[in-house]
Amino acid sequence: QVQLVESGGGLVQAGGSLRLSCAASGRTFSSYAMGWFRQAPGKEREFVATISGSGGYTYYGDSVQGRFTISRDNAKNMVYLHMHSLKPEDSAVYYCTTGRGPFGSSEKTAYNNWGQGTQVTVSS
Image (tube, rainbow, N blue to C red; front, side):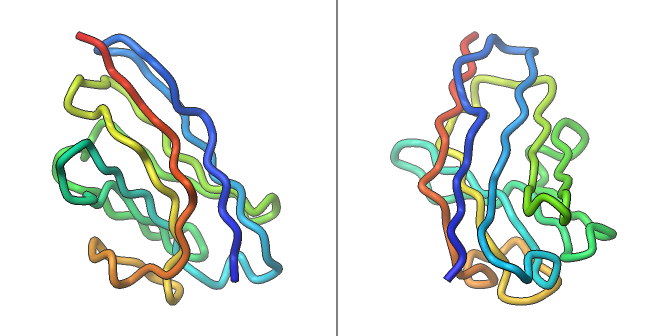
């Protein structure tokens, strides 16, 4: 079982930036993909981004493409989500998650461990 702890959320004005971090336990961090999802009140959990185990492949949800960047540091067991040009509709709880294999997808079923989440609020 991998333990995940997210941090870096907060309140930011529209157009601003934030960097979310996720620390993962375990000794085989580089063997699985990592992903970020988000969930706003009353809405389904939405795919944001995924990165492969090696870090060489990334994929983004349409709503964040070009504004968010996912990265990872396998030496530190960390994954990051760099968020720019934030909009009020980006407000949500953001969750870090581990893939079941070296490559992730946009489907929640491709992931098997979830963090507690970190709140991001973007004011207009």
